[in-house]
Length: 243
View: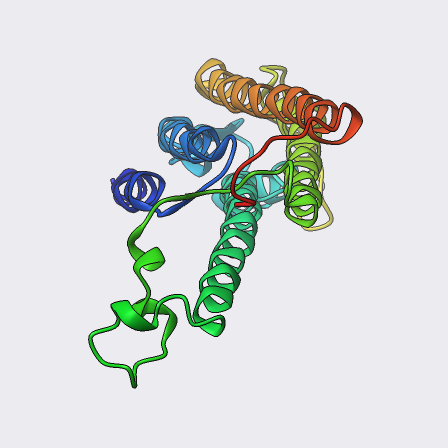
């Protein structure tokens, strides 16, 4: 529930921010959907230790030893870590947009266009300017550096999702394929036959995460292709403000 509660500041940031750019709401939407998916997917994995059972010949110590040998990848921790990386890739663009907004207002202040509107002429902070309370839309037609940084953030998300999808399909999914597990370790030579209970639910949780990851990957590819063609290849000239 604490994770789902985290939706509130995420959605509030997407709605209340004064600096906007193409696709911003969509990425924050993916953050919200990914968070809910993590919350649901972790339910079947909450008691995976108890769901790992071995035959009657195995002691509790050997059962835990076999569990550690079979689940040698911290699955839920990997899911959460990947979500943190996704958040970082989104916040990077937020940082770049915030810096661009700051530079714009600072330039306006430097040229003295605001001096007659200030209640106190001694105030020179950026927050004193009227632009600090206005919505600003970044135009990538003019802000080429911001466009490159934006594409870098999208590429970073694609790389993160590729690694995450690989871990889900080739490292985690085989762990719960429903087949009997033959366990033999250095501490417990065995061999012991073990299995994972509720394997179907655990596989379904992985498939849920794979679906969201594939959706994010496809969006990254399509969005990067569209952005590159629209702003760089065709180079359409739009008149108006540079931000």
